[in-house]
Structure formats: C-alpha cells, structure tokens
Image (cartoon, rainbow, N blue to C red; front, side, top):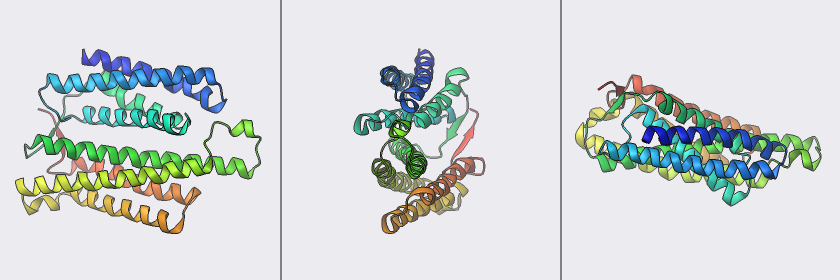
Length: 271
C-alpha cells in the first residue's frame, strides 16, 4: 500500500505544481484554491507512505537512496505549506513543488534496492543524524530560492513595472527575511547532525572515520555555511551576491552527496 500512497502523492504534487503557476504568476486566486489543497494532500499521502514503508520494514531510519530523497522531498513539501501559511505567498511553489515531484517520482515508479551501509547500529541516533542533515539541506535550498526571488523582484522594481505584473512576488523585506531565517534554522540542524554522526562513528570506527572523504567534505560544508551566515549578517549582503554565496554553499551539499562513491562509511550498495 505504501507504493500506492506514494503514487497518490506524486499525482497531487504534480497537480499543485501546475496550479501554482497561474496562482503565482498571474494572480489567479481560484488556482490557489486548487494548489493548496493538492499540496496538502500530497504531503499527507507522502508522509503516510514513508511511515508505512518504515513500519513494514521494522525500522525508523531510511536506508535507501530513494527513501532518503523521498524524505527530502517531504521536507520541501512541508516547507512550502509552512511558508504559505506564514507569509501568504505561493511563489516558492514554482521552485519547490516540481522538486517534490522529481524527488518522489523515482521511488514511486521504480523503487530502489540499494541500501546505505552503516557500520554502527545505534538507529535512534542515526535517525536524528539523517533528519537533522536533511532539514539543513532543505533550509539551504530554500534560502537559495529566496535569494533568486529577491533578484527577480529587485529587477522588476528597478524597471518600475506595474504593481499587477509583480504581485506574485513577495516584498523584498519578506524574501530576504525568509532567506536569512532559513539559514539560521539550518545551521543548528547541520551542526547537530554532524556532531551526532561524528560522536557515534568515532565510538564505533575510531579516528579513521575522520579520514573519510565525505566526512571531510561535510566539515568543509559546515565551515562554508558558517561563513555564509557571518557574511550575510555582518555585511548586509543582498541580491546577486547573496545568490552566488548560497549557490556556493549548495555546491558543497552536492559534493557531499557525490562523495558517497568514495566514502567507506556512507555508501549505497545492493543487499
């Protein structure tokens, strides 16, 4: 049944992704009334599918690459709903909802058999490790999207566009606030995730754990994250430079994911 719920989630994510375009770009409230319920149902079915999958497998931790990506998509869907409720804007759905479709479609259509090999067995701590890091990645992606929207809105204001042509974009102050708050939310998540993973792995593997390529890249990513927040907080960086800075940090995230192929600890392999 979990596969059926996941396919329902993909369908509703797709409906929401299409409906949010006229709702945001052309300020059509009727389409908003389609996009929001569809996104809510998608998140609900997605959550049920993920929980049912883990319960059926008698574990609390996603151990497949597809499961991990699916969980990441669920976090993005939840982030869209939260932003919509707090800031009353569906603009972020233009970026986030298609990503939810892509991240959910692969495990829904072709469930993977690969699993992550963990050399230690403290599942509870591992669950926190994975959940915190995925939340940090989602926050970083959300900050990048907010920075891009900031540039679009800033250009439209400089060109003195008519108000109705830019009504789909939130105000500059709101967009910048979302970008900064996303980073501030992601920093403790990333710090906690890395600390938990390091402590547990150090007890199980020993100092050799810190020679792992993905661990080294993760530490570099954390330093880049800290530097990005410090620069934005102390220099008041906005616009294009903020996008470049967020993109630089997101490249680190992609590099960390790619390091699975070289990692002796975080590795996808067939059972």
